Image 1 (cartoon, one colour):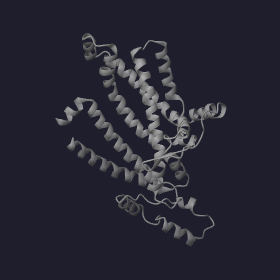
Image 2 (cartoon, helix red, strand yellow):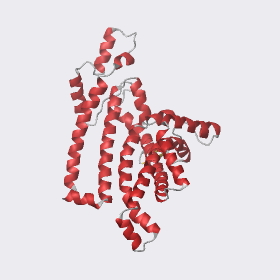
Image 3 (cartoon, helix red, strand yellow):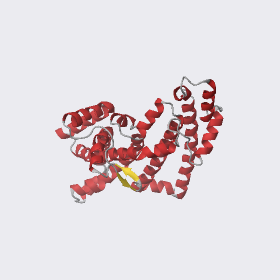
Length: 324
């Protein structure tokens, strides 16, 4: 396990280095923030002072080396707009995005696994057909449209839930969280559900396919032949096996949920990283864009490593292959 972790950490470092080059060059080669940030009425000397202050007077490769050297010390640059460290701006917004993504993942597991189990155990029932039809809608409906419909129904017409903002928060471990208060949960309900719809459909289909495949395997038939109860066969033998692909896919989807929650955060005015990156793109705030993308890459690497470790814990064959 130690050798495996060491190898993965070296791979992660190489991936981060490669992505830093791609992200930096890609972002810095597009657009000119000077045209947005500097007033058109400024004279040439003022423009040159501003360009030098932003570090845009250096060649691209020197800008990258400066960025890389600062990044090794935890400095991902200063925002052109806010004149604050880009990493600090993102970390301030990160709890809002994380709790939204984790809430959506929680809903996907809590709703998707039971529905998928039922659809897999009783594939020919009308309820199962309705579940699978609903999963197709979850895949097909655009996120922004579903969000607008949720606001129209539950906020405007029924008045049950607030439509925008994060609501009241409470402090835990020095960070403000919405899920710790009733008002925060009310504000979080619709955006979390909107973000979870695609994941629910995915978990339903994965679980159903896993149940249908596992129920035909020899070890399940042998367990039934031993006289084990139906509930024990399902929840001990079948359930543990279908968790392996579910955890793998949901773990990877968690990274996607964090990275691509931009639409949901924009629709519900949720003050997370997604809304920050949209505002930064509009004004070409390059340090914030680069810092955001690098943090997302780092999150994907950590999530992939965690999923691999959980996979090996659930499947003994992976551990044996690792030892070999």
